[in-house]
Each structure stands twice: as structure tokens, then as C-alpha cells.
Image 1 (cartoon, rainbow, N blue to C red):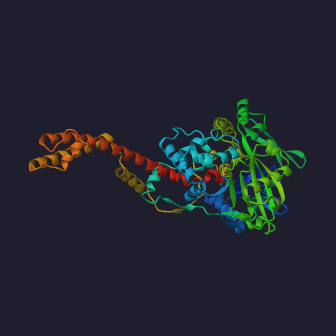
Image 2 (image 1 turned 90 degrees about the vertical axis):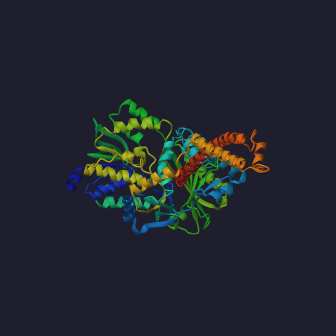
Image 3 (image 1 turned 135 degrees about the vertical axis):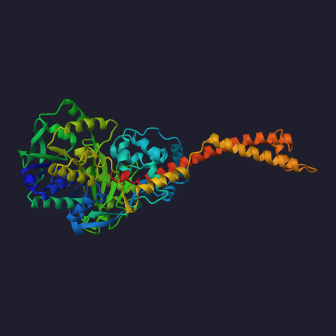
Length: 598
């Protein structure tokens, strides 16, 4: 296999997590890849910028994964420079700070009694009468948390991030970030410990001592030490093909154009740009589909504050529509080594925008001024405490899941599948909102496909697997146990037939009243059944007589029928609500992922 790898000239377009991971795996197999990175540093969206010794993470990247392979990669590359860090994040809304993930008492106390009651009533309403179909993000969240909570804690921030109404954002985005629960799983977990028992939402995460860029610079160095090449400031401006095989790419590097030939290609460049650079160009319908896919960009206003401490959070979500900032990172709380002077603090104010719009085009000086004003308006620091600042822009950060993106993406997927020597990887290469570890997995699997003939479908990574920031304890469990509990559940919570239950209850009630009346009549005495006779005030025509016993039988049956029917109906509704609540509470345990990776 080593000889086969040496015969291949693999060109990797993009020096982000996916591309560099692929290059790292290639050099381990004795291949000598060429990595082409457009920027002046590696890391892509996960890069770390440096301003006067202050390190700024573009987005704030927690290192958490369920993939043992990715976790091993991280620790092997960084070793002791991979730190364990405590996690704290909050939401800023209407001048108050709320714990995040949301905690019941803290949230209700912060919102006040009236608003809390309205939120609870809204939740009950949408549990009873949910949307039948969940096409949009708005419908998806409303069905699980109620419209009022959606309006409070989801709408403003989500629309800041995506720049489109929540009614236009596909529910698929939310479903991708939330655990794919089944009612069966939720119910079974009430009775036995499942195979994987949720221990706690993560309260700690790993982080490189000087930000994620430290990891990717180390990977870059290792690739080069093993014979690979990493070209910085290498902007791909053309992709040359013959039929359905790519043979070279055109690169602007060191002030001139170069043609880089290759036998195989792995690309993490934006999917839309990739197809537009093809020469000869693809069919018109493919180009049209690429034109319909869009991205959301963001910029970070990095501020240096002459204060040793400001607030304890790693980051704060800003759900206040009166300011434009969407999220604020406190990089000193990620790692003290992110700042060169511990008497100062560095913040990253993240503004979500579109490339070329008013916010994106604003001068750095004006953006720094905006950041200083909004920081004081929120109350996190005084305007005068800000002593320096810089601005960094990040293009094509979030692939947009608008209402018709799926059909256009499918057109590109089918077309790219016709190229046997090219694989697309990473967030932008797949136009999928993947996290860093998922991007890395696409790079790893692409190399396996290339060198070992494996057939991994890279489009399915993070499409069918959940990604939840939860820590699990492994427990022994078997399918037989699950099936046994399911069967027990069927017997424990059977659905009652209201009519059958009502008839049965009516017969019992009617016969009981008939029997008691008849017993008193046969017993006799000076006054027959004086206490039972009081029922004639409620049951017209009833008396403690032989004829009255039959009247009581009829009344008892009617009252029992109505009572039993209503009881069964209410019991079924209560059971359904309880199970629905259980299901939703399991989903809410993953609520933090809605926003946590925006």
C-alpha cells in the first residue's frame, strides 16, 4: 500500500481541519500531498488570529467529540498543550443574564411570574395542539418548547445568526444539532438504565493552550516534516478536467499563476466555488444550482480591555435585538495563555453578516467603535476601559439551510459523484453545518476511500449521527432487556377504551345501587333506608322500594357510564401528555446545541 500511495500525487484544496487532517493521514501512509490554503495561515474557520500577542479564536471552538479517533488525534498532536477547561456560558436577554443551558428556577426567576406563567401555558397549548408538520426551524422549536419560549430565547438570536426569518430556516438544521430521540428510547429510559446513561451535560472541555490555530499549525509542521507541502496564500482560481477526471488546478501563489497537477483531489473549498472554477464548465443546471446556495459570514471585533477580570463566562449569547452583536467570547477564560498581559482581558464580539453588506463593509475603526459602545450598553465593560482593538472577517462561515437549499444541493451532489478522483470534505466542501470533529472525520474517511478502497459516504457524516455535548457512562444492556421493558410498558400503560370502560363502570355502579336498595327493602323496618332515600333529591323518581331499585339500576348505569367514559378519556390524555413531556424533556436535555455551535 505504501508503494501505491507514493505513486499518487494528491492535491488537497483547503488547509482547514478537514484538509489538514486528510494531509496528515496521507503522509502517515507515505503519500506526499500538496495542500493549497488561500489564507496566510492554516485552520480555516478554526484558525486563531494574533494581534499584538493576543490570540483570538474565530468563533470559539470547544474540543469535544464522541469520536475516539478524533480525540486520539487531538491528544497525540498537542500532548501537554491540550488543556482541560471549565465551561460557563449565559444568555443576555432584556438586561438580565440567564444560565445556559437554561435552568428552570433561574429562567423563571429572571422572567418574572407573569411571563413564566404565560410561557408554561404556551408550552401546554403546543403540546396539545402542535404543528402537524415541522418544515421550518420555527415550527420545530415551537412544537417542543411553545411559541412564547421560542419568541423569548430563540427567534432574535437565530435570526441574527442566519439573517433570515426562522420561518424560512429549515427544521433540518435544528434536527441535525439535536439528538435523534425515539419515543421508545425515552419511555424505556424511565424503567431501566439504557446502554448509554447520560451522566451530565459537559461542564468541561479540552482546548489548546493558545487556541485551535496552535493545533493546526502543529499539524502543518508535521505534514511538512514528513515530506508533504503546505502552500499558504495559494488561491485556487481554476480546476482543469478532461471529461469526468480532474488533472490539475490553477493557483495564484507568490504573485504568479501556477498549474499544480495531481492524480487525486480532496477539496474543502466552498462547493459553489468549486463547480464554478471547473474548466470546461459544468452543465448550466449545475451552475444554476450553485447560484442558489448561500452562506452566512461573520466578523469578530477583538477588543483589549484594561481590566484583569470582567465576567466568568467563556462566552455569552446576546439575545437583545437592540444591539447588533450576537455573541461575546472571553478568550482569557478559555486559556490564560491567550493574553500576553494578565492584567488585561481580551474579548471577541461576533457580528453575523453577509459579505459585502453594510456591516461587513464598515471600516475597522467604525466597527471597533460600535463594539465599544455595545459592550458598555450591555454592561460588561466601560467604554473607557477599552485600550485597543482589531477586526477579523471570516467568509462563508455557515452554509444556509433555507427553504429550497436541499433540492439545489442534491443537483451538485449527483454531478460531483461522477468525478472518481475527487472527494469533497469539510463544512463548506459538503455545504453542511458540521462541527470541527465531523470535518476531521470527512478528511480521515476520504483518505481511507482513496488509499484503501473503502467506500465511506462522506455526505452522511453527521447526517445520521447525533452530536450532543453529553458525557456518558457505558452500561451493560441487551436488546432482550429493551424488548422486555417495552412489553412490560405495554401492560403497564394500556390505552383504555372509554366506551368499554364506561359500560363496565356503569354496570358495576348500577348493580351496586340496585343491590344496596334491594337489601334495605328486604331488611325492612319502621323506616326503610332513610339515608339512602336522600338520593331522591338528586335522582328523580328514585326511592328505597322494589321499583326504586330498578330506577337506581338505571341511574347507576348512566352515571357510571359517563363517569367511566370521562375517567378513561382523562386517563388516556394524562398518559399521552406524560409520555410527550418525557419525550420532550429528553430532547430539551440537548437544547444547548441549538446555539452552542453557531
